Length: 362
Image 1 (tube, one colour):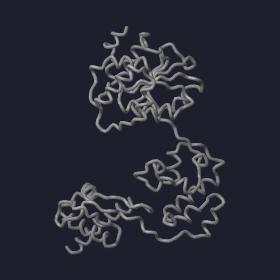
Image 2 (image 1 turned 120 degrees about the horizontal axis):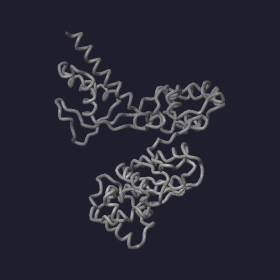
Image 3 (image 1 turned 30 degrees about the vertical axis):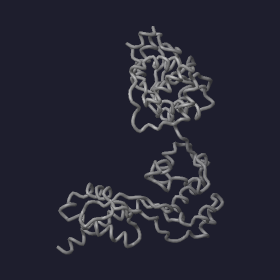
Image 4 (image 1 turned 180 degrees about the horizontal axis):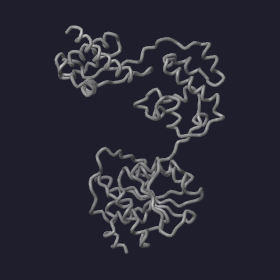
């Protein structure tokens, strides 16, 4: 029995230590909710309660605290168990286990500037050195390599497709290329825009497209198709794109992977709310070379449906810069209505525009 208990202590402590090591950062400490950690542990172990898992968990946390890996946050909040633990701990920075070999650094200095690592020796970790060597090996033969997606190259060089993008799961990935002074172009990668759903007017060809309407919501996308095919849609676009909320900000660049590079007129129509103002404004800011403007005729129809306004969605950031930039497109009288909505914390969803309501403007 004694051997069995020791074995189970090792299982609990090993899993806890593994989790802590995964989230440790070489430069900044992280806040940890101890109940969240125990919950993850319980999900992994079917016999957690039978083996008196919490007492073993408690001992593991105490050991990590004694070693200086964890520091309790004393704010009078506890985990509600016996014996109790502070609810929050700091996960301290990953211990520095020695500097890189200077001779090895010199061998790679024809490609990299190691000045950052000289100033910040805490980044001279075994894992970072492995990444540096992988990139060096790639650059040695990059002239023979094809351009691929950022995710594909990230998987090849760093073992995970999200290493350079997911800063929460891979904090070391944030700024890695900056630290070694390598550009995405040198890695021969491209950031692909996300595909989007679109509808081309029947009888039109790609070469015929001049006016494009982007709509925020799926319901109005389908209504727009019906209106377009009945020759009743404002601006008479040859193409309608389903923006899918904020996704259009990431997917807009995909447009030029499908359609030829030329001048287009892009009209955007979304909800009359804080989020919609932000999407519209950021599109214009991010793609200044494109002619993007709000679909004023459609927004004016929405303003006539003021009686169908509802509450702003909770959690929306009410950015005054985006609001003012959006309002400037409208007349003074229309701006007064928009400001009224803003002050009342109300919005007009795009769904007020249906095939039925559209009849009032026919």
